[in-house]
Length: 502
Ligand code: ME8
Image (tube, rainbow, N blue to C red; front, side, top):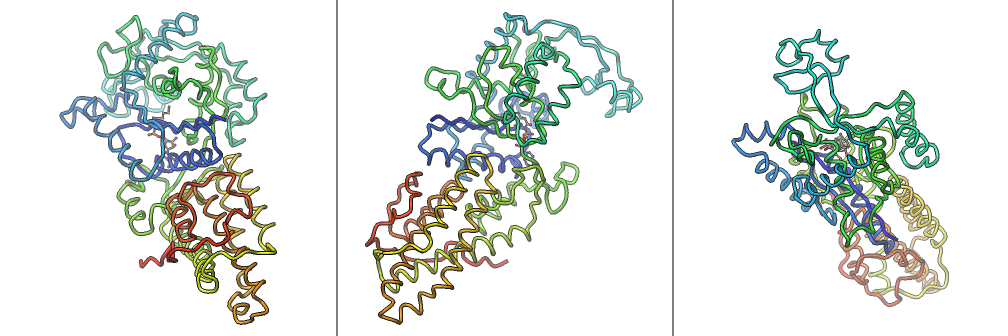
């Protein structure tokens, strides 16, 4: 099966921060999971470059918009590379391959009568070059919120997309395909807003020669940045070699950009007669130390902070923290230093790390190689864990999957206490029982390496090395109990998640 997963394409005017890194890391985990299932995976991320802000910021630096975008897109690429993100492509909306396609799509929409030249009238802030909504204009007493100068009533010719035409079809989509927007609460929000009625939306702004993609056949206008950006998901795979990936299986986003993905995007695709994505999943937000992250507070968990965590705790610990504590559901999550430390200490160092370390150390000390077993005391629990992990992962419930793994780790640690291999080792009559215990523990450790591979790939590799088994990345078939070869010799056994001094 093919599996196509996307992240939003990020604005190049920002530096990458924890929000971007979160969505991309989660997408990376699902991409790795599907590769493990043997799927033909395509994982896309990239940058959204044609915002007007880019021109302003570039000018301040004495650069062209393109030069500035090049620099910042490189920062995103470098960050994702350092974080081990396994994306299959990185789309930049200023690339020719994208621009060409967007013009083609807009031309098609025009030919189908879904894009028309109309007139837009509204309150215009000349200093800011933007229209304000009626309510915002009123709120500021028809003066610019920035300069205080009076707003002007302005009419402008714009190209419009006939969104209104798709109101019924969108309603049906959300009713008949309840999984199209997840979680459910987000789907309800979208349905309520559609029920209030849909107006046609402008898809261009005036500006000959400006930064952006010109409207085909009318170079006085450039395509509105959001329309340009949404098309990235299609333009990247709209080639003979990649067309098998369309439609996308999951567009992973946060709730801030749900409207564009759940309404505008499917409507554009309906208008183009293209198959619709299977799902838009809108997660919630990270806040930082209990407070919303914002420009004015300057409290973004930025690259410097993130690098600090990676160098102190390791990349896998960061990935585990994001995956197990992140806002994939409907609640926001707090990125707090104390919480990070607690998760590391309790879940990674004490539970998982300790289980692996003592299981392998005892295997080495008492047997030196994996013994044959006659009974398998942890088998049923391991099989349950694998089954619920899979069900959760298939439903994008990453936290649930890790909870299943965590409960199994707790159970296996209990089993170590109950069976007390150090006592069995002193009784020759218990040799068979000790073999069974050591096999079950080593096999559990092997299974953990397989299921944790998508979340913590380098720890999974280390576990395999310590266990003395093949280094190739895990495949789903390896989750069957009993795959550990008798006679395998553990390598050097060292703690995977050592104590971190703070
Ligand atoms: O909106 N918590 O780009 P953007 C979790 N270019 N995730 C967060 C977050 C937070 N506090 N802050 C940001 C844009 N994100 C457009 C998208 S797509 C066709 C165009 C993540 O750079 C989250 O995925 O503002 C959110 O949807 C995205 O960054 C917004 O990135």
